[in-house]
Length: 138
Image (cartoon, rainbow, N blue to C red; front, side, top):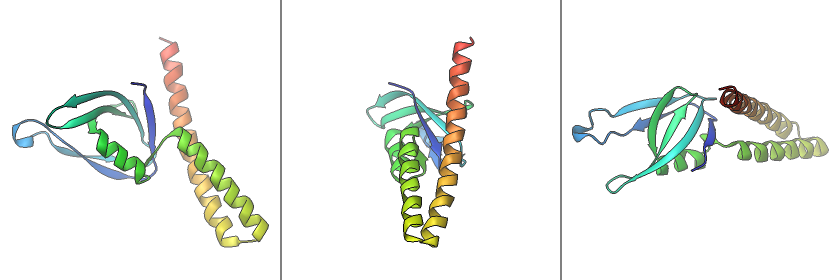
C-alpha cells in the first residue's frame, strides 16, 4: 500500500479500539486541526475487518478501522492534498463569481475558506517536504 497523507480540517476525537479481552487498552484520541495523519500498512482480522496503521505528526502510532477513516474523510474532518487542491480551485472560482456579481457575503465567506484551505495546504506540504528531505538525508 502506498503511504497516504491526510490533514485534519477540524479538531475531533477518535475512539481507539482494543481487541484484548475486556478492551482494557481502549482510549480516546484527540486529533487536532492541522494534524497530519500518515496512513501506512493495512491489516485484516476476521472478527474486526480492515485496519490501517496511522501515524500522527510523525509521533503517535495507532490502528484505525478503514471504515472510520473513510467516515472522517466523507464528513470533511480529514482531507488529502489532491482534495485540497480541488477545493482551492473551487474557492477561487467562487471568489471570481462573487466579484462579478458584487456579492459581498459570498466574497467574504469564500475568502475566509480560501485562507483556511491555504493554511492547511502549506502545513501538509511543509510536512511532506520535510519527510522527503529526512528520507534522502539518511
